[in-house]
Length: 169
Image 1: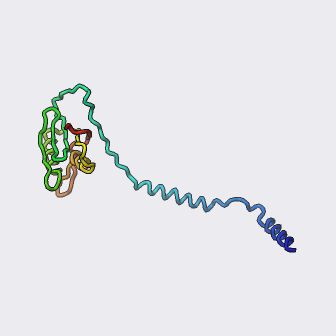
Image 2 (image 1 turned 90 degrees about the horizontal axis):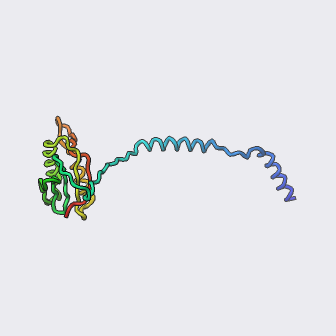
């Protein structure tokens, strides 16, 4: 008897649910629609900044001595030197109690930019043990400066095309 009752229940349920073996994809489509909108809206707010670096030419090429300024900023452990590749060091900014003198570097580069307004490139040369944070700060200082114009903060361009290399010892 027991087997016959189970058999009748299986037969009854089989006949009741016959033809209902398809998959309901409506909830999956709802989730996918919400997921697509979520990904689109979050992708708009992510922005990547890329800073292009131009590496200096190798020393094996023959040197040409142009009549214009070849600006080099040499970052050492004890000082920052602003130099011309052709004539030598223009200014040395020694290490102070607060660290490297980035404000003095910015002021000097502003004076150089006044004398060479068409100059856009500079080379930043580093000693081997200079921290990466200092490299980024020096590159930001060489690239632009902050000032006030009409009482509002403004940003001026100095030398935005920056090449990075090793400092001569």
